[in-house]
Image (tube, rainbow over all chains, first blue to last red; front, side):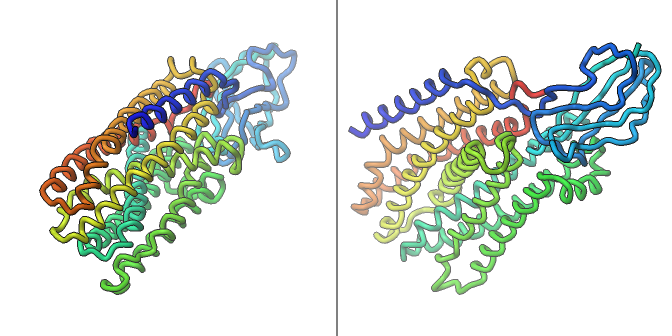
Length: 126
Length: 318
C-alpha cells in the first residue's frame, strides 16, 4: 500500500515536471542590453552627442560603466555617465565631438539582482 | 585570476549554504527532541545548539567573504583593493541593502542561540528558542533571493516567493539529513525505553518534514526553471541548463534514497523502537543512518551545483 502511494507520488511529480516543461512559454533573460543609440554597426553623418544604452533590468550606477575607444584603441574620455533617473534601465554617456572614423563602445553593468554583464559594439562616423 | 576569484566565490557560496543548512537542520531537529524528557534527547539538544551556533557563525564569515569577492568582481579590481568597493556596494547598491539585512538576521539568530545557550543547563537546556532562530534564517533566505536571478522583477514577486521557498526547503532537507546522519543518529540510543520513545518521533518527524520539503522543492524548482529557462531545449547547450539537469538528477537519486528509507526501513524501525526491541532497533537504526549519510553526500553534491547555478547566467543573458 505504501509502495503504491510512493509510486503514485513519484508519477505525479514527473507529470508536473513534464507538463511544466512543455507548456513553458517565456523565459526571463538577465542583464541583457536590448537597445542602443547609436545602434551597433551604425554609420553616422556626425558624431553622436550621447551614447544611450537600454537594458532589460535596472542598473546599479556605482558598478556600471561605458567606455569609448577609437580605431587605434585610444580611449576617449566621456565626461558624464549617468543612469536615467526616470528609467533605471537606461545608462547615458555624454560624448565629446568625434572626428570621422571607427569607434567601439565597451560597456559593463551590474544589474539590480547583483549580476555583472558586459559587451561591446562598433559604430562609424563618416 | 578571474577563474580563481570565481572559484573562491563558489566556495564561499557552498560554505555559506552548508552552514545555514546545518543551522536550520539543528534548530528543526531540536524542536522535536525538546518535547521529550529522555536523557538521550536532552544530550542531543545540547549538541544541536552547538551545531546551530557554529553554523550561524560560519555563515556570517562566509557571507562577509562573499561580499568581498563580489565587490572585487563588480568593481573589476584585485581582492586586495576590494575594501573600498565593498563599502560602495554596501552603501550604494541593492545587493548591499540585501546583504546588510541578511547579516543582521544571521547576527540576531546567533545572538538568540547564544543567549539560549547561557540559560540554565537543567530546566531550559532543551528549550532554546529554535523557532526564533528559524524566523531569522527565513529573513536571511529572503535576502539571498533578493540578489538571485529571481529578483529581476523586483523584491516582491511570484518568482521571489518561489526562489525563497526553494532555498529554505532545500536547506531544511539537507540540514536535517546531515544533522541526523552525522550527529543525532550517530549517537547511540540509550538502553532506556524513554530513549527509544524519543527516537521514534524524531525519525518520523525527520521523514515527514523531508517529504514536505521535497514537495515544495519540486513545485518551486519547476516554477523557477520555467521562469529562468522558458523551454526544455534551453536545458542543453549552455552551462546553466546542463548544471541544472545534473542537479535535478542528483535530487532524484536523493529522493530514491529517502523513499527507500521511508518505505522499506522506517516502518519496521519505528515498530521496533515503540516495542523497545533493543537488538533489532540497533541494527535498524544503523541501516537507516547509512542511507541518511549516503543521501547527505548526494545532497552535498546538489549544494555545490546550486552554488554554480546561482552564479551562472541563464541562457539569454548578454
